[in-house]
View (cartoon, rainbow, N blue to C red):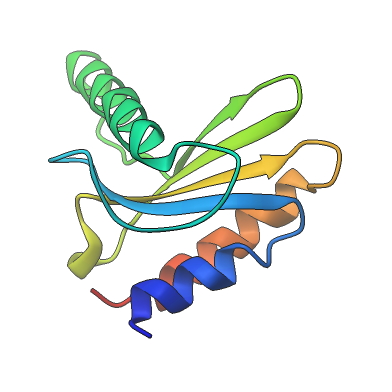
Length: 121
């Protein structure tokens, strides 16, 4: 198992997590994915557009800051996008789908940040 596989498997241990992917937001391609219930290839491409739009908006606003994560709240799910901050992971993000009724969002964000720190590319 590669480090990517281990990190993705660990991501699915977050309470309420049903799917996860590691994505390159330069290309929109998934480097790995686990879980079910969501077409992760479509999610990777679509969430790449979300990140690119937010980065452009921040640039136009002159914001000198970085994105930690982006939360999309649906009726039954949370979709959490965590941009990788490590030097080796720049240009990548972790995407996690959480079942809203089972997940603790604050805890999930904290666990995802801890998982991100262990990712080696």
